[in-house]
Length: 113
Image (cartoon, rainbow, N blue to C red):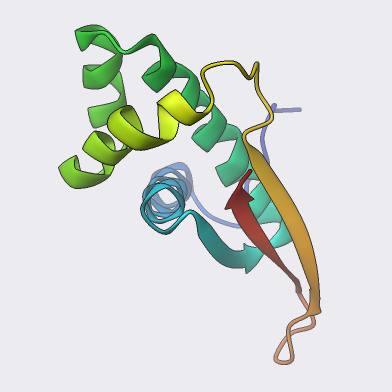
């Protein structure tokens, strides 16, 4: 059994979707999505913030390989990472909103703490 959820997509689509979710989360600092997507995107966002806390050039290039927008990477390294300098993980929070009307999927807010 893999250490991640497949989310009903092939690997390329899943990776692309998670990259978009993480990029939007770091840009907006709060996004609304389904519970399973939020859990997977939260894991990846925590990895990006941990890399940004290192602050060196190699970490910046690793984040640039994952996050789509250069402005978001700049915001991550300049604004977000220093906020969590004294914190060892737990950078994201999931707040449940209830079921979505169309398909009854559980919708949540994924936000930075």
